Image (cartoon, rainbow, N blue to C red; front, side):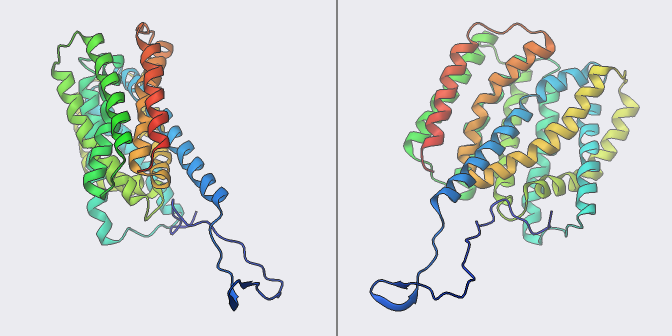
Length: 329
């Protein structure tokens, strides 16, 4: 992988090299026909971007169950700091192997936002929230992330999604909120406040990362963000390990490894490349399916009971996703 590869590199157009003269354009003798991007190539790029974004969502849907596993044997600060340190080891190794040059100075502010939002802020706030909230409750609250990300994108990048897009997004958000209220009894607590704060910092990180992924490959965006946060995460890990007890079990180790390599690095690579290809707003709406995927994982991995309202909520959310993906930003 070259360091100047781009998640949004233009599709190459094949040009004949047989030496035959170019056919003239009708009405302008002697002028070669200009090549135009093929519609199938554009469609394939969009489909690939949607697939990558969906893979990112699938990886993120395992984050809360993996966090619950990790918390069985580690404290919250240990989980957050170690996951980032381990992910940085993988990302830093890749940057070194491929001899990637540091980003231009103008990109570092955005990388700092990514580091603060998705490397430190969101993992820490959600991990602390899961000490008092169930995985299923946290999942549905964080279902508001697509709408939050779309709003950040509109402010930061100047994107102006259509009215239909916003209506479908709001309907999806209402479904998620209603589902959360029905499950929690409508009594927000400390965990909910932490989750709402996590929404804000994560949406900022997603928006900035999606914008940067148009200038550099997605794996480099999250890679440099991890490297930038390394002094904080190394110091934090040392303090956490000295203050919090640790009990290594299959669950705690497996959860930590997934958080580091699946959610923090590989999932982010797919997610940022997908956002660069199909747009931040549209990609963010795919995350409407994330809470429901997390509920399924919670049943399979944590033994939680699937709420009776989940199937209806799933159909409503999937319908909203279909609408948002068909509207033009």
